[in-house]
Length: 249
Image (cartoon, rainbow, N blue to C red; front, side, top):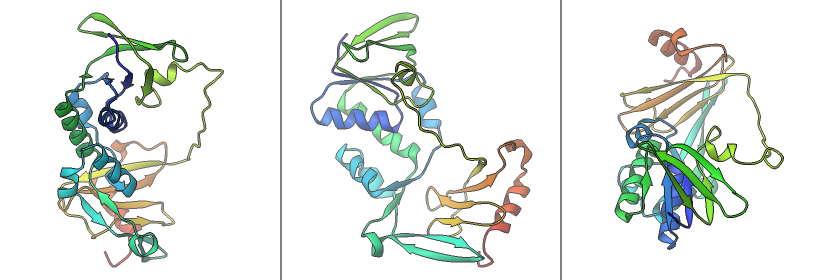
């Protein structure tokens, strides 16, 4: 089997790349280790900057986002018990769009299906070969081994994926900064507590009040690296969030 570009990973980056290449007339095939349902079940970020919004429209996957996404023209930063609004539109002429990454993934999957370009889910034992020469990829599916030759391989399968492992150790460079704290995030089927996101700088730790829609909220607390989600009860989480927020909320 042959194609021009093999894309490893069907998350938003792999799917978006596939759509952009398809619309440019370039043949692609996407390999994904997990099932479609598993990929759609992953909960990730929910705020898109203007450049990402423009790319989704360019990829032909922005129609539902334009209908359902929530446009924010600013955000709030809280410290010393007070909130201060940052006006994006006034300062930069730009805005952000609240639209969950799960929904972005779904839209890109639907666009891919309409295009007829192939995605192979549950591709196991993916391995990359001759990546700097005449590249090809091997994988197994339903117990059978397959091989795809191509002009390029695009690794969109993350830090622990097969793509990164295929880069020779004397070539790859890693730039990493490790922060000495963790995050605890909660997704709630309740309306947001404010019209825009609130970033909180507090002596007890950072907090973020975010959202996914007009009826669904996402909250984060900075915590110790040693803490586990089981260490936090619902009451503990909301009490700590309240301590970090200003009195006006």
